Image 1: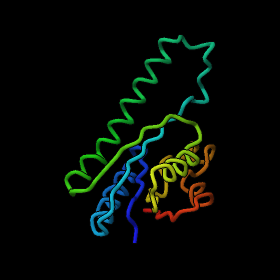
Image 2: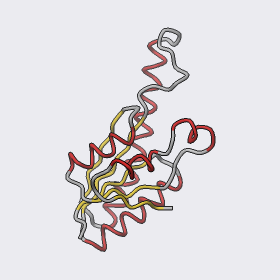
Image 3: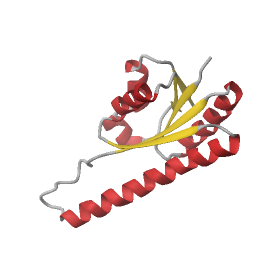
Image 4: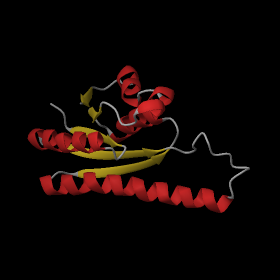
Length: 145
């Protein structure tokens, strides 16, 4: 059935639960997994002219460290399950497009992701990335709730 599952993560609790279930699914199917973490390039409240370059570099470094920590969870769980696993870290403000692009580039035949990550006003302003993936993906998307 499915041979390569993409597991996007934002580090949220629900995302981690989706990863755990995605690993179980991959194990039952004999599939490999690719973990994906996408971090925003810029935050709407950042104005480069007002923030020193050193501060922006520090924020980028901290963001990358957080992303790598999220991906290490996927690597560890996949290794424990005896699965082949690759991880991809990307920086972009176009999350749903990156998820679809990485799934295509890596040859994934299923995207399994959490139903939501952000909450409250952020979710309202940004919109549901999961909904956008569901709308635009040409490969199946399994949503974990």
